[in-house]
Amino acid sequence: DKLRLQLTGEEKKKLRKRPTQNNEAYRLVLMAQHYLGGSSAEVLRKGVALCQQAIEIDPTYAAAHARLSLAYCFMRFYGYGEPSEVLPGMTAAKRALELDDTLAEAHISLGWSLLYQNWDRQGAEREARRGLELNPDSADGYVLLDLVRLSQKHADDAIAAGMRAVELAPFYNLASFCLTVTYSHAGQFENAIERGRKTVEIDPADANNHCVLAGALAAAGQREDALKECEVAMALSRGGNFIRLETAAVYADLGDTGKAREILDEIEKNWKPDGMSSFWIAVVHACLHENDAAFEWLEKAFQERAAFMVFLPGFGQFRSSMREDPRFEALMKRTGVSG
Image (cartoon, rainbow, N blue to C red; front, side, top):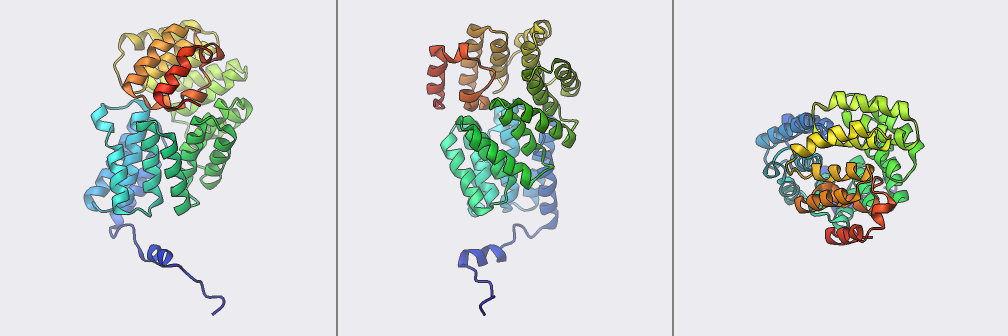
């Protein structure tokens, strides 16, 4: 009797509850999880399709709606698809919570939507922590907490959360990638390089992994290695604006203004609002020390409600010359991310 496990009513309910009665729907969501760790449009669209198939089989499967929400959030973040195609992320997260408000993934997916769609850092942190209360071993919960704390300029907390995510899921591309980004923006470039190389090993076909590693190498003064990673990233980018602009920023940091300008001019010529390009065009101008142009493009990013704007306070490429400009603080206040 003393050794018998004593469960609360809520714990007994959780043990009895099955996420779905359909094995095929369950399998599809497991497959979708793999694709949600990538950053290319093709990979994320596969994740969307798998979640949609699972929902068609079992419309009451909360985890399928939660994963669909994540896929939409990341598509919005990277500027893929039309706005009408990627905005349903919040709706899918809320549907998941309606179906099961004790599901950690539902709270975490809502947190991503609050962060990227609403620039609501406090709401995102609340949902991340609620998700971790429900599932303390959720790598996704710690990844979200990593980026939320990074957006709030709490680098030590962000790194601790990122390290816990990697500890829980050592081969999860998204967790390793986000920790690399966090190290970089915290100015810990040697740690960023070490983690970045491990991330490349996890998924060498992900152009974004190579691009972030290139940025860390450039910041650490390892020019030749940085250029090599830029070349790999460009070869894998398949013409996507996100990777090309990230790479252009690295070229600018390395002093190769010709290559940076070539990429920048082409993308500006063919620019259209996508919730991402304007922000990264601003980043490239900032790396070229063209502050007025950078502010002009940041204003466009604000009007588009670009997801990246939530990281404005701690974004490393915006140097002190921009941060000391009154326009920078004014823009942060308008975005709601000041301080």
